[in-house]
Image 1: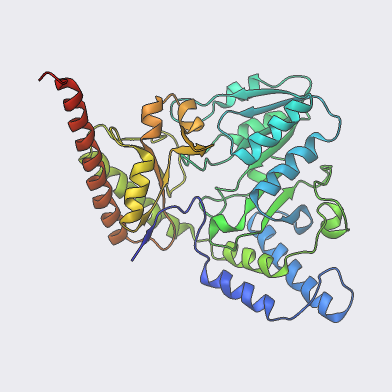
Image 2: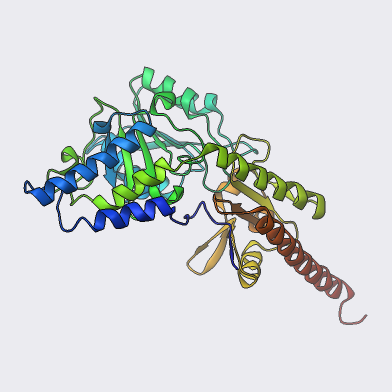
Length: 388
């Protein structure tokens, strides 16, 4: 039986969400923008889903639009808040998800100026440093709430409150946070928040963007009048129903059980593997995420070896043009390239058990031992030289 420990990449759909999608599809054809009975039935299901998600966020339904996922929500917020021809200043961080960093890079290419604030060794960004980067011409602050690689939770509330007091728009990428920690729009002080259903046991292909009442936003997707003209396209009624069901199934007591499993895994690994470290371990983190330095190992090779043993994890590296590069986030935290390349990420979900964690730990320790043993042998052979 395989063990899935890559829940920050995507999650298994919750049975309630799966049933909600199927039930909506069984309604038969119906475009939520149509005025006939079938269309109005679809419209009711769509708005019921919107209401349920908005209620969980302590938002009003009119503030929430459905998108195709977190990447679209981030792009829609960033391009929509800056607007056409606005060549002003943007403040962000050096640890953003590509769906935030790449749109900002595009705006920079168009003429905007950008300040990227680095994180500290614990993976968190200093709120004071971000606030100090604000200028009179700053139009946007964009930053992540909970980091997808390290799980480190960022101080967005304080930053957003200060930025908005100066009339600066604030976008928060909350994709990894929803479902793992409480997320209430009133607490975060932002203008826009992005979400994605498949990160919290909902269906893939749907996300949401919360837009504060009164905040103007140029639409990214143009066409019809759907989503109050803020996002054109036929509304995904069945996926919205699944999203709402997944939100309805959020259980923070269950996440505390997951936290205990994560802590057990980390504690036993650190006791067993010399010089192993938890990246971001000194910061406040999501309860399910562990990013680990495995000294002497190779993250990609560890991932492959564990996959062959039936265990799915992620690495601290990214493949670019066929070449494995160390994670820019881990480098920003001050890790050496060697340590960044030896890092792995495990991210637990609601279905993981204590027995799975113990099996995964035993397999990981075995794989690290094999890798470090080979490295030591190779180093010894190089040291002896051809004349020995």
